[in-house]
Amino acid sequence: MTQVQNPAQTVLSQDDLKTLVGQAALQYVVPGEIVGVGTGSTVNKFIDALASMKDQIKGAVSSSVASTARLQALGITVFDCNEVAELSVYIDGADEIDPHGYLIKGGGAALTREKIVAAQSRQFVCIADDSKLVQALGKFPVPVEVIPMAVKRVTRQFAAMGATAVLRFKDGAPLVTDNGQHILDVTGLQIADPLAFESQVNQWPGVVTVGVFAFQKAQVCLLGTASGVKTLT
Ligand code: 5RP
Image 1 (cartoon, rainbow, N blue to C red):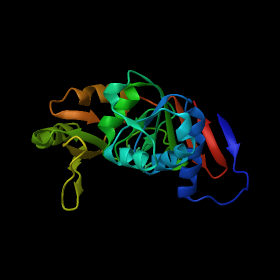
Image 2: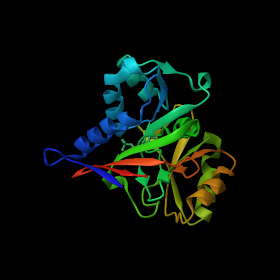
Image 3: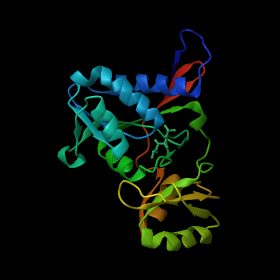
Image 4: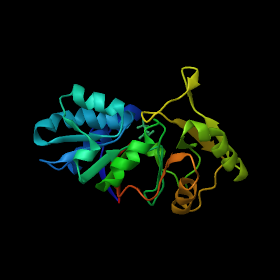
């Protein structure tokens, strides 16, 4: 683990920590290439920082409508995922990070596109404040994107595992993702083996994406701490 000191030794807010890791992620961006960009408030800090090197990169592949809008507003070209065979790096946040780099993602409902862009990238660099680091995944409700007609069926399958799945709402109606699907947030899970859990839930008819990123785990995590950015590899 490497650590960069907080040079001014000032008290840093959670927003400051996100800014720090967003800026620190720039060192992983390869000049002349296209960078994979995730979604969320931490990634927004990265996108803002990326604007400072927009003339050095070809552009970005984005994981959500929201990130695409932010990238384009800053003058960064956004490529369709199908136009690009492979990306050198994908930068994204997470809701939970375990010591192996396994993640829970999807708090921002962008998990499906995030997993696609992560899978298309040689390296996944996860950026987060250190409150996201956990010993074992599962305290944060696991988001699962499901096809609307399968909501009840998948809810029952989680109940049979002793877990509780709750349909996510936004503005008084079931949230609709960028892909036109719904999100179940699942609590009460024991995720002892993230790879096995991801495989199992992926098999269920109607599940589009499970928000456990074990097969697409992070190779590098940049964690914002009170004393600076810690790098976990
Ligand atoms: C969106 C995500 C986000 O990366 C995750 O929710 C973390 O977001 P934030 O940086 O706002 O805490 O997975 O689907």
